[in-house]
Amino acid sequence: MRLKKVEIQGFKSFADKTEIEIKNGITAIVGPNGSGKSNISDAIRWVLGEQSVKNLRGSKMEDIIFAGTSKRKALGYSEVTITFDNKDGEIPIDYTEVAVTRRMFRSGESEYYINKNSCRLKDVRELFMDTGVGKDGYSIIGQGRIEEILSNRPEDRRSIFEEAAGIVKYKSKKEEAERKLEKTEGNIIRIKDLVFELS
Ligand code: ATP
Image (tube, rainbow, N blue to C red):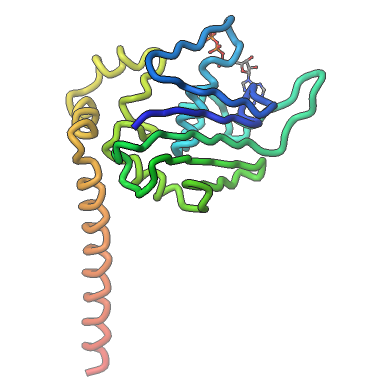
């Protein structure tokens, strides 16, 4: 699996549609301070479902939409698509290329697409679970994050190893099953009460 393209439109400083092709090997993005380098990694994290405004260096989610300049009007929505080469099938979906899109309007609602098919954020999260690519995945290491990882509590550091070991998916499924079980137990108690009242 390899990230091969990032398309950005209306996200932070990227007013016009911008396509960044990532070839094999190492790609470096260079530019003066404040020119938008970090906005590219923000865009990748955002399309993968980042919901924390703080992690995107804003104060409200709307801040990720191009806010306009003295010469240009603000935009009404933001859209980012990232495309992965999936010839090795590491992303568990039957396509050799996987494109994930997120679109957000000023009203705050987000739309997600996998290969142009509308889907839920949950679907995007599950697709990348245990691949290291998710919004919290270890493949995106932001400024200062290495120090944070080293000084983290051992329990927090463990989650990085769990993702690398590929067990996050099972932990998440287990938690979901436990929640359902708890709900079902609650329903059984309620049914027993009703049966008791009726008998
Ligand atoms: P540095 O080298 O200092 O880390 P950088 O190249 O990583 O800088 P970024 O932090 O990615 O730069 O980009 C900051 C720029 O993005 C600022 O000029 C800021 O005005 C612009 N910007 C951020 N949000 C928006 C927005 N919603 N609309 C328009 N421009 C924005």
